[in-house]
Image (cartoon, rainbow, N blue to C red; front, side):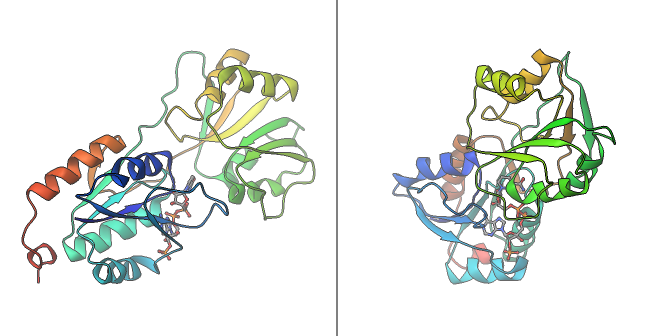
Length: 256
Ligand code: NAP
């Protein structure tokens, strides 16, 4: 069965590993190309946008794809919309890995905002020391609040205009709580800005803020439309096995 994974997340890497040695599936992983040097993956990989839902649909037909797994990040809502649209049109089976959001625990002090721009307003007019744990493309929003000192951590160097008083840490998770606590303490951070990414890899920064009594400006998740919902990469493999078992004859899967 020819499978497309829409990737760019921990789960898509895990799913690629699980499918790499499974001869029943011929898998292609698609990356948007946001990370300039992504980790090598054990399945065929293509990079770059498809050109909207129409471009994705055309690519799915051209590559004779029979099932799609949307394993994109919880904040990647456009590609998920395109996947639902294209797969719906072609009547292709689509499953989406939905990573549960973090829920505030006793001791957490979260202010939830709608966007990176709203997060930039949240610390207010008095200068503060703010830790930004965001993608490199979102850091530009904080140029509008130059009164704060920022410590920003992202995987790759940002190529957007930044606020003037910022120090950059280039690093990729997972991180541990002890190191996160040490970082926030050493940098005298009094507020952090985060996405509600969910999962374990970047959660230690949240437990560190709870321990230190630091408020978190949490950027809310967008609405992500989805196909058949699964939680983990292993569930997606089970779903693929089911699709294989119930596969219609070629042609009827496409409604032609
Ligand atoms: P997005 O807003 O949903 O997508 C914007 C456009 O990027 C899509 O319309 C599509 O272009 C292209 N695209 C996105 N994911 C793609 C994929 N896996 N393969 C091919 N093209 C893709 O997503 P985004 O926020 O730009 O995120 C891009 C990628 O980074 C995603 O794969 C996501 O998993 C990963 N990521 C995102 C975040 C985040 O916070 N947004 C965090 C970590 C990782 P066309 O319309 O031209 O096809």
